[in-house]
Length: 427
Ligand SMILES: Cc1cc2nc3c(=O)[nH]c(=O)nc-3n(C[C@H](O)[C@H](O)[C@H](O)COP(=O)(O)OP(=O)(O)OC[C@H]3O[C@@H](n4cnc5c(N)ncnc54)[C@H](O)[C@@H]3O)c2cc1C
Image (tube, rainbow, N blue to C red; front, side, top):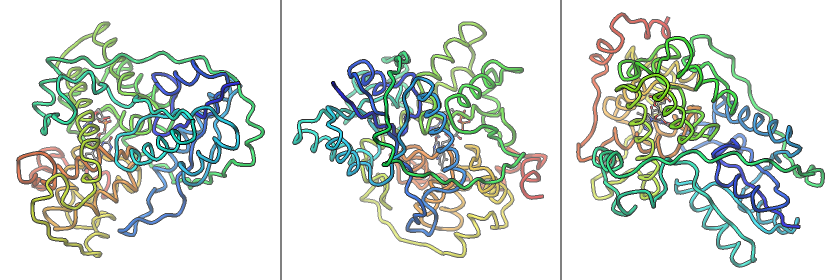
């Protein structure tokens, strides 16, 4: 009997999921597994590597997937430890023919893939990673990956002109599996439950069902907020100023191709305007950062970023850092946004740009300390988008502009003229 371990990573869904589709179409027995995030770890800036909001979101998404699999007579094994070591042991113990998993694009995950691939070759076990995360496969690009445009505008223009985003793949039928012999391997996931805050701009929990609820709300309900996205996208308050798809995209409760399919349907059945097109452009930003991260490898995480030749001077001040994290800098726009992040695990794009610029250009702190706090707290944390955007603001990305400094006083006047956002979070 042929057996495959199906390793779920940041692809916590069944639809439009290449490794899931291939595993169920190829093997008689498929064993779905997921690794718990390492508990109680502290990063080099003194932050928990995964904060309570992020962990809860991940937990809810994994439980949602497990429930769906159980409805089909399958299951999701929750494993502990280092995935590469544990998967090798599992595959050997249970005489597995293959390990299938999604292909990730950030350096650490790519290294995991390399290790498992090498091991698979030496052991005669088929190890395969399938790309499902992006809208385009490298073969779809009108340029080679090594010669990908370094800045966003030409990248976008080339894709708009010469390529089309892929369509979502179908969901396979899930075959049942008896996992009782694995039961002793299962880890216990004890999550902290942060208190909900009714001011949140993100009124959802993790999981596929919640992702589709968010899609439904944004495209089809009431005012159909998507129709005015271009005008509202710089907002900071409330559910509807932007799509709120990023947390679901980050861990794969929904894919970019599924969002595009829904967008196409909306344009067909209702209207197609600048706003609907702009959501596509934002997904291209995501695409740009995914492939930039892949090309950059470890450079993405180094202090000098994508410009190693540019001089670098380390500067860090613990007291200023803590004030920034806790929303106690004295700058109302920055403080309101940082308090929102602490209280909900989410922050608007406008907010992120301002607080990042403030940390780097006003406080003069190491950009990596800010990126690490976002990594710990943001429920939509994604290595490519997070580190890519931080580098961009620090002037250490691919962009020829030296750096992007935001004047937080002027930004406050422009984007929160009646102080409703600031008052929501500071009073
Ligand atoms: C310093 C900084 C750090 C960031 N860290 C992350 C992160 O860890 N994870 C993350 O998903 N986004 C990150 N972003 C990008 C952006 O802020 C969020 O994607 C967006 O605010 C999420 O809200 P939304 O889904 O409502 O976005 P919408 O405005 O509705 O956009 C739709 C989708 O387009 C994509 N998108 C939009 N803007 C960007 C962008 N600038 N970069 C990459 N993708 C984009 C996202 O997938 C988003 O869900 C960061 C931005 C900054 C300035």
